[in-house]
Length: 367
Image (cartoon, rainbow, N blue to C red; front, top):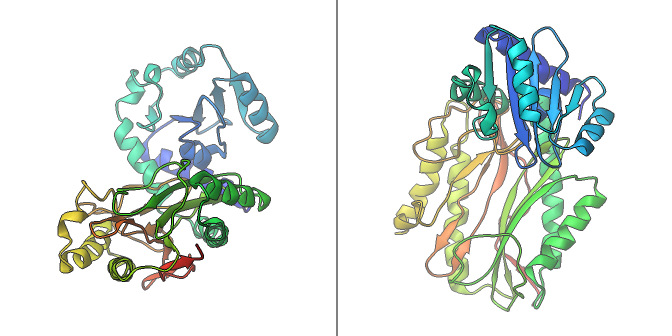
C-alpha cells in the first residue's frame, strides 16, 4: 500500500468529523469486522474486540481486549496510543466521560459492543455509520488501484483452484492448495466458499470433506486481500466434459453477467445492475429463482471489506468513478444446481473496467 493512503484516509475522516460537527468519534471493530478500524487508523484485529477513540486534536487511542493484540499493534503502529484493560469497555467509558460535553458519536452499528452502545454518543450511530460507509464506498483512486492489484491475485488464485479440482479430491483439499499458494504470494487474508455436486446443491459453504465426482459442478467465491483491499472472482467448473444441459444453463449466467456489467456506469444504481441481471433470468423463464429463496445478492461493493449496500433491485446507491464492486448472478438453476459467475469491476468516467480476466467459459477439468 502506498504510504500516503492511510494518511489520506485519516484526513478524510478528520474533515468529515468537522463537517458533521463532531469532536470525538468512537470506532469499534472485532476480528471478523475490522474494516472501520482499517480505514481510520490502519489496524487489523486478529482476535477479540477493539475500540478506537478519535479526536480532532490528539493522536488516536485504542483499547483492545487481549494483551497480545495490544503488543502487536504497538509494534506495528507506533503512532497510536494502545491500551489493554481487563474490562476494556469500562476503560473506554471512563475516557469518554472525561471528554465532558464534547460532541461525540460511535460507529459502526454492526460491531459496537453492547456496553458501549448505551451512552448518549451512540444515539446517532446509524447516521454516523452511514457517512463513514459513504467514505469507504466512494474510494480514492489509490484505493481502487489496490483493488485492481487484488483482482490480479484473484485470477491467479483461481488458476490454482482449477488445477486442484480433480476427481476424488475433497473440497477442503482444493481450498488448502489455493490458500497455501496465496500465502506464498504474501496474501494475508482470503475469504473463500465452495460448492460441489449437482441439482441437489443450493449454494456455497465452507469447504467440507465431500470428494469430487465425475460430472460435478464445482463453484467457488475466491476473495484475496492485497494491501488491505479485497477483490473477488466467482467461477463454475465441471469435472469432466459438461453436459448439454449444463452448457445451456451456464449460457444464461454468462448472458446475465454481461448484462449486469453493461449496466455499470456513473449515475446508475445498484438496483439498475440487479435488474439487468434478473431480467435475463426472467426472459428464460427463471424468474422465480431471482428471489431471496434462491438468490442472496447480485453483487456487492469490494474494498476493505464488503462495501456498502448489496446489489439488489431496491438499492439506490448511485455509482461514481472509482467505486469497485463485484457483479455476480449467482443462483440456483433447477436443471443443474447452483452456478456462480462474477467479476470485480471499477467504475470509470464512461462505464466500467473489468478487473478479473479469467475466462468466462464453462471450465472443464480432466476427471
